[in-house]
Amino acid sequence: MAERKNKRDALIRALSDADANRLAVLAQARENAKAAVLEKSSKSNMEALRTAEQMLAKFQADKGLDGTGAGLCFKNINEVHRYLSEQGYKAALSTLYNDKKFFPKRKGVISLRAVKGYIEAKKLEKRSASAQQEAEADAGLSSEARRLDADAALKEKRGRLLDLQLAKDEGALFPAETAERELAVRAQAFRLGLEGWAAKAGETVAATFGADPDLAAKAVVRVGGDPAKSGELVAFLLSRVPAFVTLFVDELAKALDDYASGVWLTPDMAERMRAWEQARALREVETCREACRLVGAPEDRAEALAAVFLVARRLTR
Image (cartoon, rainbow, N blue to C red; front, side, top):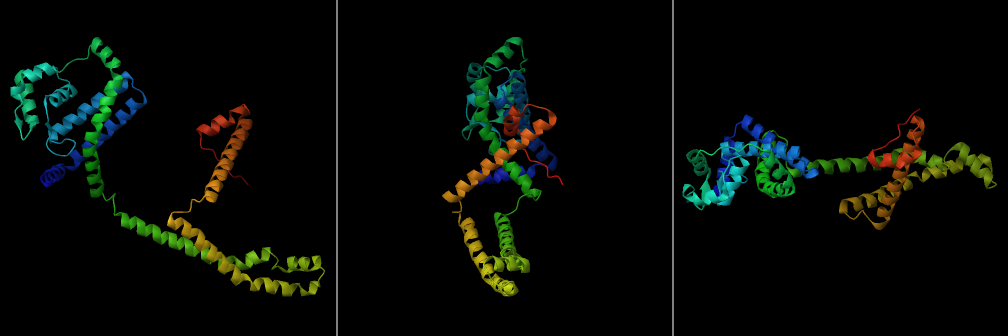
């Protein structure tokens, strides 16, 4: 295992920047083509996927890479046949078995050099796509897609490894501890900011509950008191600001501790989130209705529009 890892690392380091970029581009092209096939197994999509697979396989072969990063090799004649088919060569499986003397095994595998030697010795020609072959390809699109889907898992290992290596070299990756520490600092700053808000806004909050000369006078008159004593009420309410700040900080700590402990999604919170989501969806539909009215479209299309587009009403003054 250690020997294989060392060999893989050596091969990766041996790739030049241009080769590494080329490999990443080919791997991404293969993934894009594969996604297109899974979405729609059309002849054109399958042809694009075959081309992407062949280009990637050729590059791997030239650079001596396979899914594990070791030298490209084959476990048996079936894998040799699959490789030749992917490269576009005419080679029947029965013929390969009859010619198995061309494929001696070393350390239990058939080397790529042996396969290339067989191609030269037998002067294998690449097949041309005939109308019959295209029809057969169309008939076997689903099975081909499934095979490629299974085949991709092995090749993706190599792609992930090289992508990680490239990301490390470009400085795009950094330790998780760094991100966690940064998030912790930001969370602490956010909490301190909220606590500071309580102290700064305490008197303003008190004023909304009567710590305002006009409001205090109205409150005193309403309960049959002397308006001249409204200043005493204001003073009393302002004296309760420290108690408000203490209450706010304590309740804030309880709320944020729930988020920090991972148990914040209580049944009550889940219900509130569900209600919020319903209200948001209704606002989107209403916005779509308003948009339909503005452009003269039927309002019954509003729900369909809201289901397709992310809708928000622009605030206007």
